[in-house]
Amino acid sequence: MVPPQLPDTMLAVRVEEFHQPYSLRQIPTPSPSNLGPNDLLLKVGVASYCHTDSMVIEGEIAKHPQITASHEAAGTVLATGSSATDFPVGSRVMVGVPFHRCGSCAECQGSEEYKQYCTNGDYFGVTTDGGFAEYAIADAREACVLPDAVGFDTAAPLACAGCTVWRGVLRADLKEGQWLGIVGAGGGLGHLGVQFAKALGLKVVGIDAKDLALELARECGADVVVDARKGTKEVVEAVKGVTGGEGVEVAINVSGADEAAALSCAMTRVHGTVIQLAQPTEVKIPYPELIFRDIRIKGSLISTKQEAERMLQTVADHNVKVQTNFFFGLEEVPKLVDFVHAGKMAGKGIVVVDEEEQRRIKQAKH
Ligand SMILES: [Zn+2]
Ligand SMILES: [Zn+2]
Image 1 (cartoon, protein in one colour):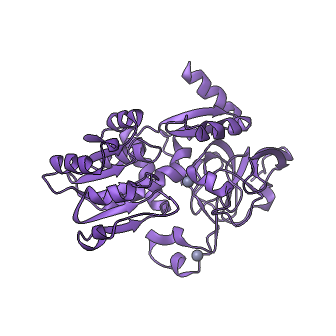
Image 2 (tube, helix red, strand yellow; image 1 turned 120 degrees about the vertical axis):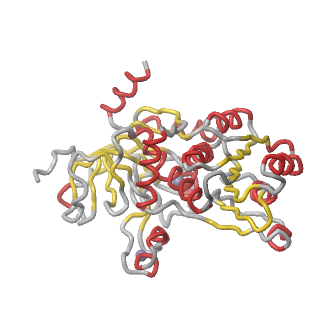
Image 3 (cartoon, helix red, strand yellow; image 1 turned 90 degrees about the vertical axis):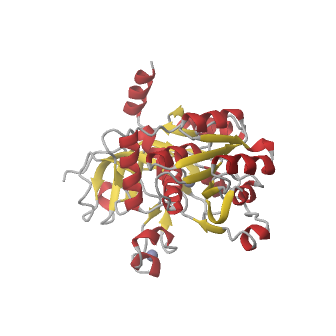
């Protein structure tokens, strides 16, 4: 393989110090000749911003600063390590968040469905360099080839947000026609969860607390939407009213609001399950939900590669739409972050990094 000719340096959006804004810097471009056996050198097409990025910058997750931000990316393979034979040069891929898992711990050696729980590896854009750069290194064991119908602008926000809520819907383990509740149904994860659940034939009650979010949940196919601002009692009555008096079988909570986990429990039938995906500092649940109503709480972490591949095929087959806000070029990342902090962002903020991709998308928008 002839190594691609790349510039010596590239633009990257860096976490230099915790609690400080990102810095835009020129840093050395990863070298195609230094790739590990499972590494993919990517030209980043699109990378996006996830709530977890703000936790990285606050030092809540990352081991150390000095990394390139963004754990949601999609791009084109320019060069591959010796073992990454499933990814010919030119492949379009979505990056997986786990990076260089150890391969030997109990999680790596155990069931296929828990490999992302390995704590001996890194996480792309969280504990090692991520997608807010012109070029990035992805782990071929975690990356997925994109179906032709799925563009980079759709794929990048699926790398964490999509995988997380897709796995949440799978872990609900419901059959066609059963009721799933989603608390935060009109948010970045929620609106995808609604579409995924509908693609799997479930009935969906979407709960949110903003007019636009309720509207988005309805557009995404929620059978019923309920305004959380009515208060727990009314929400629970409304949910029971459409589910034969019992409540939903399973509720997924993607809202970080203080009372969201308790509401998720209250709208779920006795012996039902709540899947907690939001990451507030504390998940608050009144004890009677656990003891008198036997609600089971499950957490869930991103997804496996196999689950991600099935998600991407579902996105292609069911024309799942990601609500995105476009930013063009890494220089616009600070503006994106300002929008998020000002609460002006409905859906996901995505950055089109690749210049050709910028031209293509701008043309398509006209
Ligand atoms: Zn491991
Ligand atoms: Zn994330």
